Length: 401
Image (tube, one colour):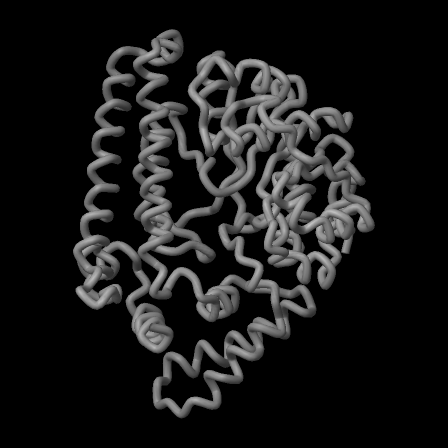
């Protein structure tokens, strides 16, 4: 379904899939065609060399569906390979002739293009929002998740909250309002995209450049806006769109006799969610039930993902601290506000260290992870607001392990 035409907005993505995990979904859901319709053909993906060498089938499939594909050029924009590919995607999309350019990771774009036709609808709403920003001379828009009173969204996990909120609190102090640049999309005015690329090397290298782009914009004294939408998700696993895999998982659960009412309820909701997914009608509640059937985040490998989030958070906080110390924020932040940001950085580090310590302390001598104790220690019941669903998830994680 085409919800609208958006000639002023183009989409650029980074892609790293050497194992071919997205091939099946791109073919089944015709992802490329969906994106072309949503952005009037103005779509480009910058693929890593590893993807080009080990999974050329995916790149050819995207080309057949009408997507422009480029291969990363090592060291062209940054010595950091991850940042280099992000900047290359930003460079390529800025050459497509649109007034605004939107950056996102390919995996998240895939899921959001299917679920409630999120990307198509988001493009329409964003274009209307961007039109209103013209008179305000906004240069960058952070497209984020809608949050509830817990700082969570229906598509979110408490674990993501515990490892991201400390960073978001610091970023919010810098810009003066709530933004969410860690997991979603960044939209920038075309000419500003070029300035971001040109000025990137004057700052420290960064694996997660969306935060860097926000700070670059702040340091130049330019206006930033925030656009939050329930159409924006954080799920980025190929299995979420693999209907056959999900149906097999549900059948296995039904075949295992259980008097667990909670599990049975989720099983029925997940079955309905799959039917809705095939019809592209989706609601947040059934999405939760469907996401619970994925082997993420409640698996024996949970601690691995949490460690990764903690390390990422610390790198971002270090980067922000370096920018504060460099003096580049002095012209836009008064002394007291800057001091508050520094205190926020220290508090954020302490919060991440707390989660990390609880994580390490719950790895048992046999190598298994004491999930239940960990959840209690990090305050899952108190702050998460998902006590009823937690029982289902705990039982499922025990079954997996």
